[in-house]
Image 1: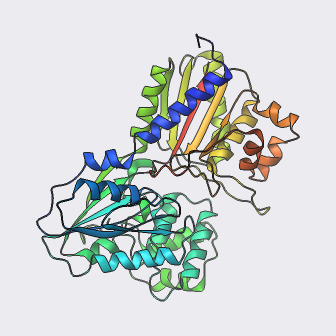
Image 2 (image 1 turned 60 degrees about the vertical axis):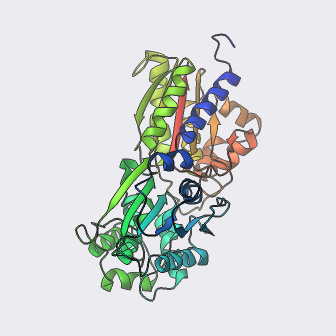
Length: 424
């Protein structure tokens, strides 16, 4: 291989960096490192998220001598055998009838417990849609419509969840309240900036500081049109459990920052100088792509803020705001990358990878994609207009034609997006 950074070497190295970040958050490793003391009574397992089934399988294998049962919800295609723990696959990102069935099963599982029982909640990203039980008399279809409106609004994950919690009979601490007097411990694989457990899966076991008034303000600020039943709940519904009303023992067992640290170590072994720009970068996907393109050019031209060969690492969750023209195929990572390529105008010596650590970017079957110095040139040769695809939010299709999508399949974990830019 020598010292030359060929296209093949750069692609291989970026994929190794990306895979190392995901491997660092493998549920079996994380669960075993953070198991609490075994309970005197029963252990009831509940949970929701893209990693919850794998977390449940690890727990069941680690505690064969504990009276253990329970139910967790995960996304379709993410189920694995979990022994004594029932797995329910449900809809994501839009909830479905199975999401509602899972929520009801969990509330039933934690009812009539004793003080020496332990409820272990296994929570990871994606749990908000997978754990859905509308409050009051709201129909599931109305809850799904409200959720879809939030997803298309451009609101941050925290803002979306503030609304979701107040439309739910199980989120925002309501699951923990239902488990009293049993002890509740929550093991979390974080996928959100700042690792706030109240945001991840809308915090079903975490006290909620947001209020009905906060939720109503968010709806008004983003000009959302919600079903009448949702509007009524935000006007007259009940508040979620607040800090001090329920006990919260939350343990973060895998995080985006740890994933980026693992990626940095892999980069060092490959002869690159890693620079972690943060695990909580937010904003419009294509705009962040433009910003990161500028930083990459600075590295290559001026050796600032780091001298090449180097890799810029970042995480977080960007947003894609859909205009009136609708959207093609794609997610926030492929849109970030296409925005990056357009802004960079493909100078030599710069490659990039970006993908969702759960293996699914948006609703398509790829985690993300790779950008190379000749991405735009290869696109033009194939008759693709990068700016046109970017305007149509059709980044998946662009990279699919080029053969540059990154497909991992479901990784059974989720520590948010991983982005790496390699500069030689």
